[in-house]
Image 1 (tube, helix red, strand yellow):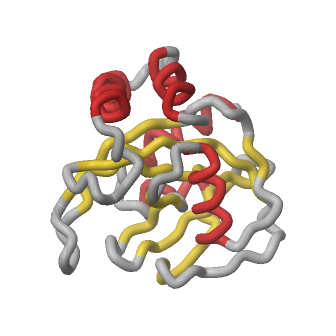
Image 2 (cartoon, one colour):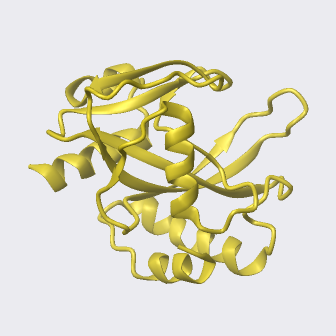
Length: 182
């Protein structure tokens, strides 16, 4: 999914969530006005991609406990110049989990989010414009905890809010998961 395909996907993105509707013009503005929006060099904010990974029975999500942010989150990361945002989401998921049999549920956007990343060492606070895709994985496949994480775990969907301190964007993806699979 290149830049033009992503802009098109955003123009056709339908969501019942007010905050996502408010994000759409901000994403489009970033993509249209900044050639370097896929690079960390755009320090005000840049593109990232994430993988919302659930098991085949849709009973649990695979989350990483992020070292820098000290939070349970879905796998994901920086595009680092790569404009195929779907490829970025898959690469990040594979790197952060070690899973080799991830299956993309569909190539449509699953969720979009803009969130603040706090200052860390020499990097100033900035915004991540995160595009999220839904992946299915086998809970029995062995996973690997990457250097970026403290831990990796399958969290039952009914325990997600407790585990993530009611993270609003994760709760939104949980609601979408329940809508798709129930």
